[in-house]
Length: 253
Image (cartoon, rainbow, N blue to C red; front, side, top):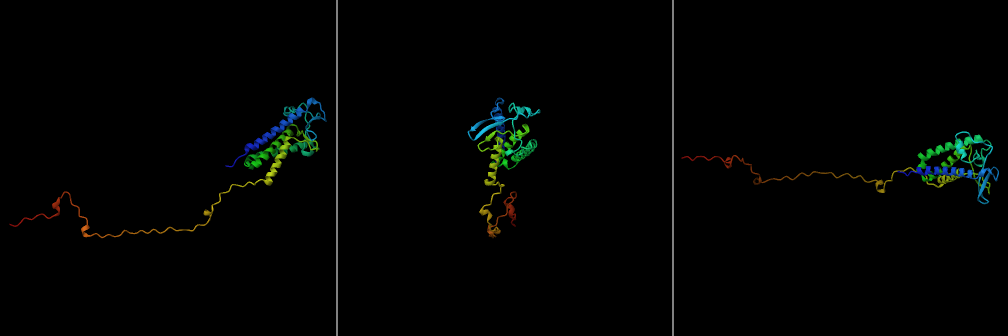
């Protein structure tokens, strides 16, 4: 039986989703700092001086939603976070509501397809597919959660030295998973269906047809018995010995 990797696929997806959401909630709540912003609508903290920092920006002009999402939004902090309704590099910023709806629908369809393929398809039987697709599924679910709850994606990782667009942990999982998947497609060994064992050389070479030797029955030799060797006739046990001889005759006087 082929080895199954369901546990790895779903475990990576759950881990990526959990780390992504925990990091977003913690960073945005931590950098709120009582509403005192050192930068434009937010705060930041240096991680690698001159290169990389954590940044959190907020949107005081957008009110909270008055529906079932309000408790999940309030965990993020007293003020609504500034989100990205589009995709990477600001794609879809000009139509915020429409862009968020479109990308949320795409993310939901992608997550359903990954769940079905990961459970029933090759990722459940191949380690090289279970790992990258688990990462991609976790990243997809992380950003999908943001689009549903916050109407956009919360970003806080910023390489400001090269002015790289702000991103999050879910984006990292998507990029790393896609890179591993591409490497597997280019350099991985293709999957082959199990084949029947090849016959041995002795079994595959033609063997001469041999017929069994005919079996001939030899009659037993005829034996001729001498008259002296003939068996004697059996005697009647009730007649006695005189039954085989003629009765005696009286003498003529």
